[in-house]
Image 1 (cartoon, rainbow, N blue to C red):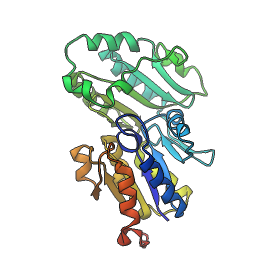
Image 2 (cartoon, rainbow, N blue to C red):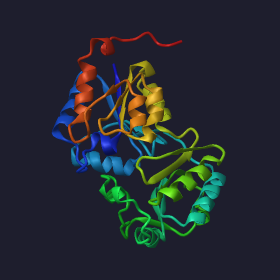
Image 3 (cartoon, helix red, strand yellow):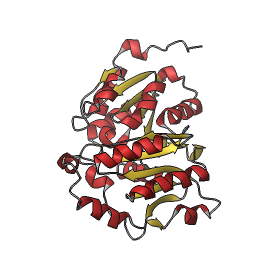
Length: 294
């Protein structure tokens, strides 16, 4: 039995934000043969479920970069930032006054100045033209709806003792500012810093990454890590590439991700996930069960 871990944006989803019939068919084929297929994404669990519901698909998932792992209607593991870490991260963000939002166990919360901060940077002339052409630009820069959560500062959220923060999502459209913020965030003790596009930064607990999410799901289904397959395209997919038995980079993946992969499939607009699943299913050397590494 294999466990396939699929990234969502730039991987399972096309640039038009849909799951192609070919990808859906390949996923169903793998399941019909007794394999497990999960979504392992930077998106919040609610967002992943919303996409899957459009296609009447129900898959195990690791949301918010593997910090919230769910299967069979159960929360298997929730990896959160400490309140003290959240306070330090927020202070660094406020030095730059960039838009940011929080992924929590109670949904996504946008900073109340998200829209004004976004407008300010868009009008600054510091955003590279290629950012506007990126398939993730519109999704990541969208204006929050009135019904979505807002917060003024971290302290106002942390007063709720039942709320925990799994991920900070920071939108940094100015490349110079992004490099400055990456340096600052990586100096904070006990956090994991990643990106999933050229213009964002994501910060989790040091144990909150897709590699850990894959391990939790593999353990739940009693599948050795040697029998897992990870498919992705971005920097935040690297931990699951390092954990998986076989790593597949999308044709549209970053060069670094491709270098770390065992195989490169087609792009997300060429049904790359379907091609990757078929490649594994039709490769006798991959389908042969391996002896666990001791």
